[in-house]
Amino acid sequence: MTELALTIVFLTILFLFLGTGIWVAMSLLGVAAIGMFLFTDRPVGDAMATTIWGAASSWTLTALPLFIWMGEILFRTKLSENLFKGLAPLMRRLPGGLLHVNIAGCTIFAAISGSSAATVATVGKMSIPELRVRGYPERMITGTLAGAGTLGLLIPPSITLIIYGVTVNESIAKLFIAGVLPGLMLALLFMGYVAVWGLVKGETDIKRPESESSGLKDVLQLIPVVLLILGVMGSIYTGIATATEAAVLGVIGALVLSGLQGSLTRASFVESLLGATRTSSMIAFILAGSTFLSLAMGFTGLPRTLAMWIGGLELAPWMLIVALAVFYIILGCFLDGISAIVLTMAIIEPLVRQAGFDMIWFGIFLMVVVEMAQITPPVGFNLFVLQGMTGKDMAFIARAAAPMFLLMVVAVALLSVFPDIATFLPSAMSDR
Image (cartoon, rainbow, N blue to C red):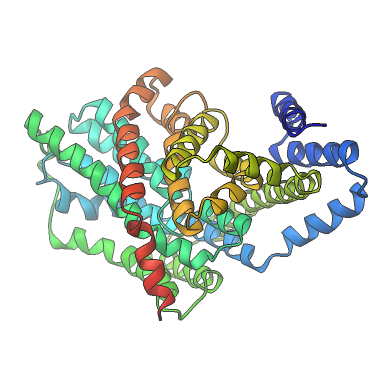
């Protein structure tokens, strides 16, 4: 059977499974098992058992549930309230006013959450009512939240970066550090857009409540969160701790912070633990299915053949990057970010390595592109979260998020032209 026919068979079975509502992990396992049974003479059961055990026992993966747990703990604290109170005095004088709190708040919470959905939900819960009271346009409230909420995928500790690092066998610590500057660059692009809008419209903090304070006491509420972020990321960058060890420090810091805030109860502790367990189990299951699919496709020789075929086309590196960006944006219209990555890495990784791209840089590029997919209908996950929070229809939310999507296109272009934005900090880290 030709490689084209093999590809069609794999994709047909996969989309058949996904279309019938089967879990993504079960779909991956099913496609891999059927592919090995039909096109190889390898023992399917033995290969599946060995592969799944190997994927589940990876030490690198231990950072995943810990960072998820850290975000779950802080999600149940008074963090969101303190974020708004602390950022408002710093942001209200800027052109665009308190809309900047959406972006700065998402940037800060992304650095302690690792989840795009959690970032949107937490910051939106505290900012949407406040901004509505002040009379800010609904389109700008929704659009800035949609765009800035995606920073949870890029700014460390990113759950999706951990998945990517495990899949392509790259350093999680270096991927985390590589995401810092691009994440800040994207946040500044969003804030620049809001500032230009504010200057054009002449709007700053509208209808500010007279009783609201704006003193130093409010700003000081940001200190515990900033210290937690610096502690986690600083321990990784200085080499004091690995990503897994830093995750342990993050969990301890989150427990201490929530305890000092008086929001750590037995019920909240159990809820955070169960929430982290459910999310971690789901991701680990998907990874196991992805690993087995990668093995099955390797036995058929499909990735190697496709890589040779792409190489034979002699595409210029920039053409390959454009093609991959378009591919992932389209794929992201139908799948969430983690699923899109684990479904495709078995084929994409050889192509990228053969083209000579740095895999750390490509990981950051991929995160930005997957972020774009988070705000594209019909399956842009952040759009669904915002629809539930705002009550607006999907078309309105998608239009509000469109300017943020275009700014992400600019970010991808900047990353491609100036790759040092992503590779500078990891290279400096390796010299230590």
